[in-house]
Length: 192
Image (cartoon, rainbow, N blue to C red; front, side):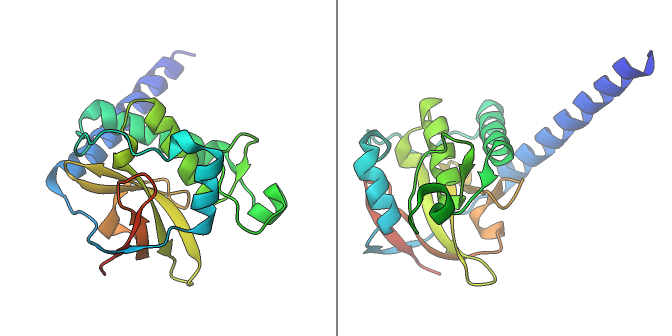
């Protein structure tokens, strides 16, 4: 039994060191997603906004999120918790239709559900919706995938259901297609 407190202390120390390392990485890096012309939002997003209008109100402009240790911890915790507690299930099986964006309330969802859930939780924790922008990307296999991006003073970060690591947008394996532009429901093409 005497070893278990030591093990717990070691685990906490290693976790703290990793969080500090990962957070410190973003203090050195910084890149913002280059946006182009206005595009039509994804249909699933538009129907989501009809059902959840408070999730689609732009709110006041606040500037980029200050990436301090507390904000980093919040982003990391929400990203890990939603990824861990959502069983992946496609829209047809989960909702009975081919494309349906929804906040996860039944423990099941696909990438767009996970992204809007993270966005909702982070907004309720105090991060402005203007700085929590959904993005549509293409994977290496050509599949479309939705991620959440966070506009920070250190660049745009990605919270992704396919990764356990928060990354700068330009350190992901995706081809970027479009992203919310920070207005209520506007989207813009990504200037790749």
